[in-house]
Amino acid sequence: MLTIKRLSLADAHLLLEGAKARAVQIGVPMCIAITDESGQLIAFERMDGGKITSTVIAQDKAYTAAGAKRTTESYGVASQPGSPAYGINSAIGGRLLVVAGGLPVIADGEVVGAIGVSSGTPAQDTECAQAGIDHFVRQQTGND
Image 1 (tube, one colour):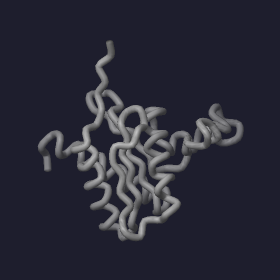
Image 2 (cartoon, helix red, strand yellow):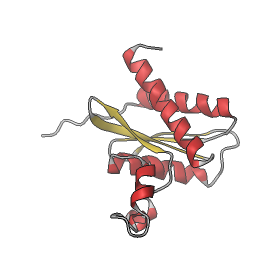
Image 3 (tube, one colour):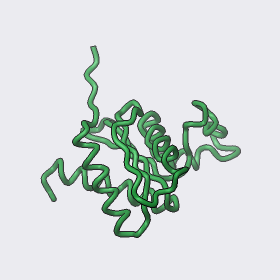
């Protein structure tokens, strides 16, 4: 029997809260998706003004980061022609994204979920995703 560690709905709300706060600070309305460790959606928010096309992109970024247990940005580098994972972005019906903005959420050395953010530049998406994780960690450790 396996014991699975995964994000709760309350955890997902903390991640959303942190990412959304950063999006407001930088003035870019985002689509923010939180998944469990298997890439299944737990929570999603499309801020007023978030791009319609980014709803699916944010969810697929989180799906990729959770399932692959790595950042979507790292796949971007590895999927270029001549690289070891060239063409992987066409796997899983195209759900595997290679654009920055998807980060795994790690607790006690295990991937427990992921956050995917989309609507800004790849750097802005990653910045907001990381802000979500930072807020979550601060709340878990009582440092906020």
